[in-house]
Length: 275
Image (tube, rainbow, N blue to C red; front, side, top):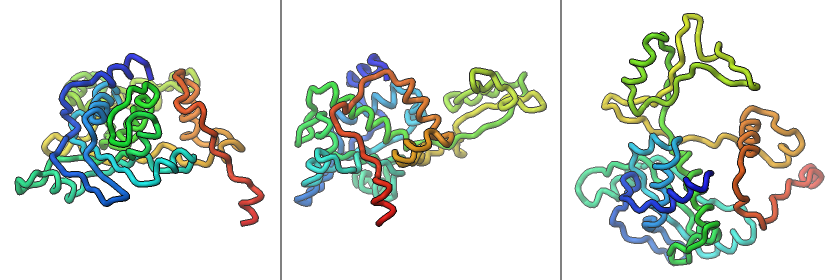
């Protein structure tokens, strides 16, 4: 990600219009603790929504971000164990009720994102009391994590073929719901127009779906890929999802966020076969 965008995200000091901050007490059970995200983390989340275009549908959403910690988890992160860094979910009726503030109605929340406070400490972004630390690397790692979790917070997308002479009016009517006008597709360096223009010379328009009140229809997005590193090592980008991920990684010119950590070791084939 461009350093200018990173700086804009970190400098976000405006009101977090999409990241709610309900007045809730911390849940402390001794070995585990759950709190509403501190202001600096909510600011980063709002900055990610405001500055990264693919999250623009979330500018119409309400999101609760919480932070959880658990005794012993920081040591597990430091030992290289595979841990859950964060989790996004659709807001349940219970979470909406608990954040309603006793007003007798459900709060308007679309998503709940829980972030591991132990992961944030491991990144170097904050101390054990969740106070932000002045660590560029730690904050950049945090931005990546928030970007990842918010990528799970999606909205339903529709596509429709529109006669070429009606495209402009149709797009104008969509307003902020318009995603793209697919006049052509680039494959292998060549324009493949047939994939987005049908036999009637109608052009494909992609846009966010809306309910009867004109609101986005929010949903959870799964990961683009699920794979074993050893399989990718043996077969390369053997499916379109892996190919897309490899292409994105080749384009990335930024720093390695964890340069000193050992890489995950692929499973030993012989030990697996013997098990």
